[in-house]
Image (cartoon, rainbow, N blue to C red; front, side, top):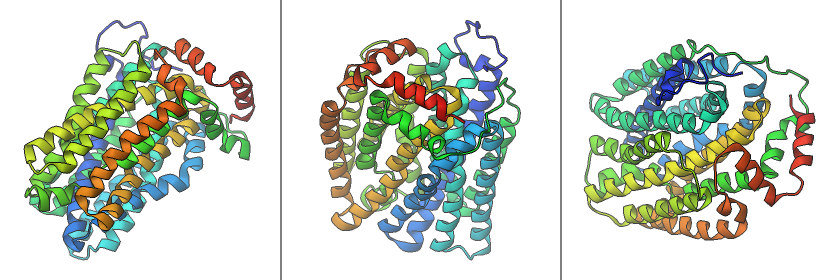
Length: 436
């Protein structure tokens, strides 16, 4: 089940496991490519329309495929070789970026054509994200899963740092250069995934049923700790996310150009990368619930500071803190999901988890664009930051088991979550019958 690397390797770097190393670099390349493309799309759409609402539509175009395809994504990830699924998705994303490059080069690019291509790339990303999450536990031994999740986050954040800055530089040479570079990186990542060699039990391909389709949703619904963690992230980031409005801040509020936009988009990832590297080397041992809620509070406060700032340096600092706080929630939530979910269900559970993440990110961008159009850019971000703090207070009362959870160790997490539901054993037994 695990990668062929020795599970007893005491080396401090988890990258000693070759399958995970290939995965880490592939994830980094896709993150860089996605961010380069995001900077180019955001700047080009705003240049074409001058509208914050259309920036929100870009986020909506990425979210809709994820929302519509969630149940199908989970089944594909559980029924087919996850490496092949990831490779095909990255190829489609590479071709989509190439289409954007060709459209810009030939001069027929419009806001409608950009949204259409982004929608197609969003569909591929809808399959790629959950499948990559479900792939991680098979690359390392079980005790290393929290560290693997943190390292995976570091790959993503490394890409999120380098990608926007590189995207801003490339866009100065024109959108064609940015899109073409993203295309090459997506295809390179696909080649790296092809090098991953792991031992995995052939997936069960029993006929699809309604029970098996909804098994992931049922599993999460009956795990109060997991449900509380992912729903907290959903509403906090949905309200507090301001990424879609960064082009407006860069051009109209902070008086920065494409390079400044790249730095602003990179800033959250700087904090997130530093925190993910720290968590990869120093696993959180105790008071997991309190730490997670505290991190979301810091996220909300940093959002408020960014909303009110007119200083480029202060804005960068607020985004760095925001990113560092956010990654704590990401690592805790992802570790809980992977540790508590059987491998044959990880695709479906990861798909539902990714839908929550996508809702908070892409739909959050649409929400930011809509509220900015209604109330103005600064009030929209400010409202989001205050709303995040309100969500924390409500969730502490709705999910007390999440607040009290102490450890990420598998046995401790299972034991504590059972306090929130006396029917867990029954639910797990039902899930065994619905897995496919």
